[in-house]
View 1 (cartoon, rainbow, N blue to C red):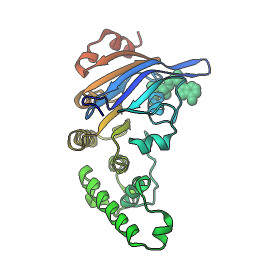
View 2: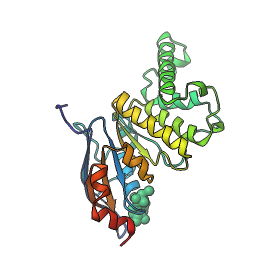
View 3: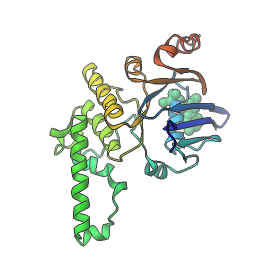
View 4: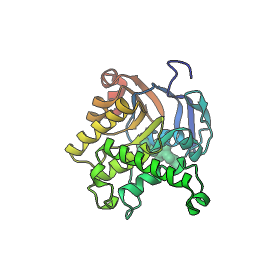
Length: 256
Ligand code: ADP
Ligand code: MG
């Protein structure tokens, strides 16, 4: 793709539900290797925006492009296969599975060797399984879960479980990672640690991140760019400092 191409380009996306415009011609551009926050009061359209980006929700009009690839209208598994991974606001981990199992699940879509080869214990399948396990260990180490791989994911403290969810998304080797409220429900220490991991994903892995987050401290420290939505419309777009001082943003948050 051409030098300087956007990681993700959202152009004039409109989503209507019966009698309600959840997103009204919203546009923004996620630069490669950046953290781009999407913020706004309740009902602003943040979740709808995420659902459009991940293919869960089909836009009535507008387009979403990943680099040079058109994502508009593709189903979630195709969007994921093209390199857009997401985490969920509420944990979606199998409770009894170990951390290692949960992360291997994230690698499932990358598995080339079919179940037949695996069942026949072909050397190619064994080689591939070892490569996946090696990568799972690398990613676990990257997010600070190296010592927890054999523990049941559900037995870890909440903050660690959210990191498992993040690591599982990283196991899909995404180009763009969509994080839905990654520090919600965390203690102050967990918030700091998670923000550092997210910065590390951007800086160390070069993955672009779209972040929906209510914690303004985290947004202001972490985001390179911020898009502010209110009632389905984009009301501001810029650096954290720019949007923070924007009168329209202040009004939207105060409900005035
Ligand atoms: P946010 O995540 O910013 O709080 P949402 O994207 O969840 O906002 O919602 C935006 C608006 O769209 C809200 O008014 C919400 O009630 C409405 N909405 C969201 N999903 C649906 C749906 N599936 N059907 C009807 N209305 C919806
Ligand atoms: Mg929401």
